[in-house]
Image 1 (cartoon, rainbow, N blue to C red):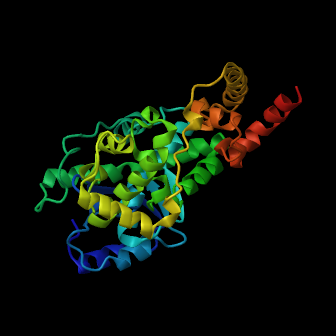
Image 2: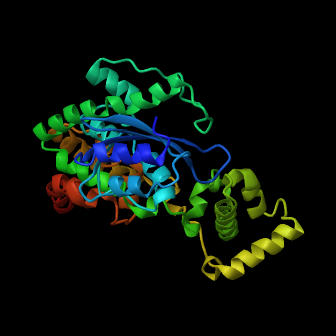
Image 3: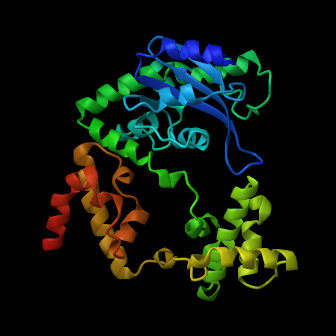
Length: 347
């Protein structure tokens, strides 16, 4: 395991010419808002090693390599790994191949695990013994380090097989386009105006309580970020809903803090929760949805795709209710659907 700046420098020199980087991370996120990155595992065609992020003083050389224009990240279920690294680097990868998404394009289950896809492709059964380990402890057990390294040892082999099949089915460009979506900075930067989406049980709220709920959610998010604590440690969803309904009241101190927060963020004063699209569909909407599902099913069969990869039920209802920003109206999805959509409009 790499634990000094010198060792890191030597490792980076050894992979200088390698552009394809199989990457995995181990992080801790039990009592913090942001993940604490503990380990970074990297495998290339020539080298595989584990970097002790907590021990390295200067991570900039590592970030320079990771975020080079020509570096291609090969990751399984990449979003949390990207986030954990973004919290330290404030950078996002230029090119990404997510083997979980790639497997879905090839009709494997949408959330297939790294262990399962490795078993299917390589015939290797991986140990799951350290799934819940506290990766911040030092020294780490040798077996735990080997477990972490296994998470990248087979990534390149999986990548090669999945990529080759995607090329044969003419889907590689689709996969890479969806990988670019994961490099959207909005995924990794908290948005106070959208904090209400983290609340469970919103449908219990009458419209008269929506504004206060949105403001309380923004305030909770702001405090969680500032204190680096899980949002529900500061206020549970149940408490937030009760405050919104005026069934319970904030303490005097919290009330002052809340009012001060709103005065500093005046754009939140008129904020609303937009949950109209979550209302039950009408009979007409159900009929439209069924027609669209049949259309998409036809195209999915033609291209050997899971229907959900093109559009799920929620996306279809959003489209029916006037949202023109749904994913299937853009990119490769629209290219394979546009003829059927046009025919449906004319019929």
